[in-house]
Amino acid sequence: MAYEHANPELLARSITALEAVPASKLTGTQGDIGVDDPATGEQIATIPNHTVETALEAVGLADAAGKLWAKTTPRHRSDVLHAVYAKLIENRENLALVMSREMGKPINEAYGEVQYAADYVRWFAEEALRAGGSYREAPAGGATMITLRGPVGLSVLITPWNFPMAMATRKLAPALAAGCGAVVKPATLTPLTTYLTVKLFEEAGVPEGLIQVITTGSASAFSSAVLADERVRKVSFTGSTPVGAALMELAGKNIIKSSMELGGNAPLLIFDDADLERTIDGVILSKMRNGGQTCVSANRILVQEGIADAFLEGFTERMAGLVRGNPLNTEVELGPVVDHRAVERLQHLVDDAVAKGADLRTGGSAVSGPGHFFEATVLADVPADAEITTTEIFGPVSSITRFKTQEEAIAQANDTCFGLAGYVFTESLDRALNVAETLETGMVGINQGMLSNVAAPFGGVKQSGIGREGSSEGLEEYQEVRYFNVTRRETY
Ligand code: SIN
Image (cartoon, rainbow, N blue to C red; front, side, top):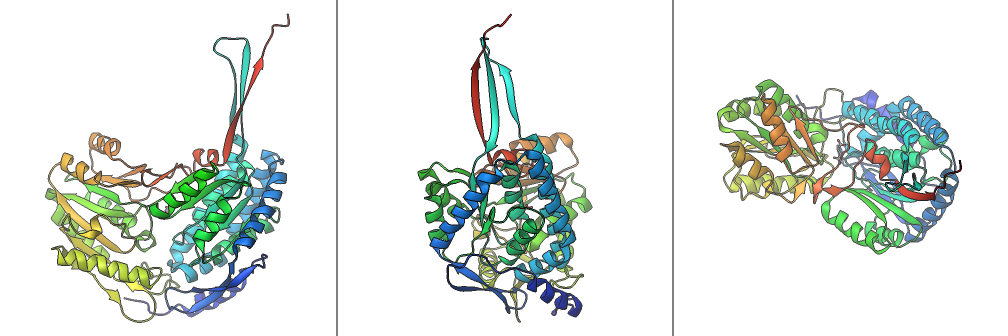
């Protein structure tokens, strides 16, 4: 069953929620940018197209507020972040509805993202109290060595459209916990959730001015200007590898500390001894969370020959049965993709794979009508030269190939410049750990398709990024270590 229209009650509540999104306090703009609902194509709001001068004004405001914030105690910052957590949870309905309207995330998943995003705030409220540091005797004696971890300083946070709230809090919460001010630049496709989130941070007690939101259609002019400003000491970005590389080049000129969560091409390996039901559940979760629009989504599913037919049959049935439709229906499991360019890209990838010999088991086409929908698609026996094997799919299309031996599967899995996530399904503990250790990825899911957790160090190796988000490592990304050497003389 497909739901073409929004549930009227949820639609009405979403209109009220959109009214709660605040206007920008920064006035220097060069016109407006429209924000569309990807499920209908309808424009639902406009946001300011801030100028570069406004971005630099925001840097000044956040830097000044950040200098005062850095002097507050860890306990104070922790208490404020706990209050933010409570405020976000109290407002979860408005946040989920706004997110669903601007991003197309099915409403149940949007509720899930609000909790996930708020959990980062709670986690870093706790981590704020454990900022680290050490006190030790110099190895040769005669001196005491003290290290302190302090705030790195003004942080520029550039967030993507696919998790408009969680990617903002995953960066903002550790920045604030460490004692930094921040300028956030959300994607122009999904800025409303960020505006609303930051308003709630302020209502919960975050000083006004400490977080500045800049929305601009000129992303590269923004980055060039703010990263050339010596007040900026940190940049954190989630998005594509080419943009990350360009940002690192800009950051390099002023030696700005950088964390980059970049593109992926996640391999998912299924061995003959895997539990079929558990595997299908895991692959659906990894592949189809957020309509396949996650950087950790299973991009290349590699199945051992003995289980391949059974897996393909069960997986195809599940994919074909997913309920597609307007995300403002609680039954919907697959919403739209983010815009018409995404639809065209997916169609191209599917057509190319089929033309080169892939076996289309279900789906394969854009859905006609309003909005930007693509069918849940299964491509089996995809040849190595198909573009889909080297491209981040970012949509509800799965690409499956068969393998004979573990050695062959590992070689294929690691044959990419990316290294964000990988997955392995097997009932053998030895095999699971051997494969996990051999995969060249920053994260590995073993018999499960969900890696994301506030307590986990999220991040990649190779061209998938640098630095980690979440966990205690996520706080360190917003800190600088300073060391004091104290000469000691015996006094007795
Ligand atoms: C991402 O897709 O960039 C993040 C996914 C997650 O945190 O689970």
